[in-house]
View (cartoon, rainbow, N blue to C red):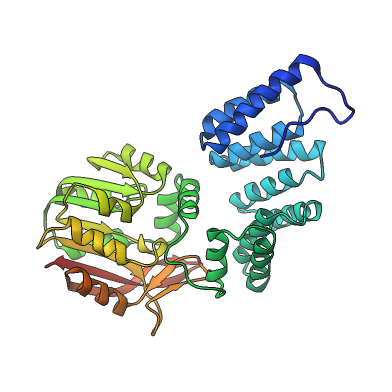
Length: 374
């Protein structure tokens, strides 16, 4: 967010500017509170009163980016930069919009221009690191993340990015804001991308392993848009879902397969819910969870004896219980899963090693597990 300024020549634009400022400041307040739809209305009203104002264009672009409309955001930010070519915030927001549109080289050029204008911007260095990582320029990405930390962006997210490149301690979990933003932005194309591009078959494989066994109540842990829902519905009298992403939850609810879908952190939900489930399924969820101790403890809390817990993980290499990969996904070892199962009161009924999905055309090794509560 940037401040609304008066015209560079010192003009005031009279009452229009004062009214625009009121709309603008309300927009900033809504943005900071996370109410992006309300922020969009206020910034649009401000822009109508002061057409072409770079600050209003920039903030309206920023909020439309938050609302998952990167093409609209990029167009507004181009307008802002036509008025103020060196506007560092507009350059940074444009870089983020172009990145979401898949234009990584153009995004990198924009963030480099932002850093020329404002070299001490920690968030700009973080974005540069993420762009370089996506382009496969790992050493440069690590240097950018270190520069971000040196310029005040020593956040959990920044440390997570650095850890994925082998620097620093491995975080126990992915930062919540990263997971929410990732899947909020991914929600519209999620199903098609997973199934058609990544050849994702984890839900089918997990359900096949249940061999038609029915459940009085089932929980789809990290349900996303609801890909597992139609597969689990015939097996369960009651089917609930839980997911961290608000937009994923909206889509899962709209699909109609679930009796209830809750927006929550999965470990928090398992720890606090009063419901009990004789089947809990987590398809390709733990890649963003990391340490699974709390999840296993929570699953043991909600699953009665004889109930089942089945899930998939990316398979870690020998000698590594838990590893954060350059892909920003966690992998877990079979030994780690066996250890947690024993500690939490589960018996492993079956496991299967098979590709979990593809990444850049290559199969990702996975472990599928079916556990029974003792």
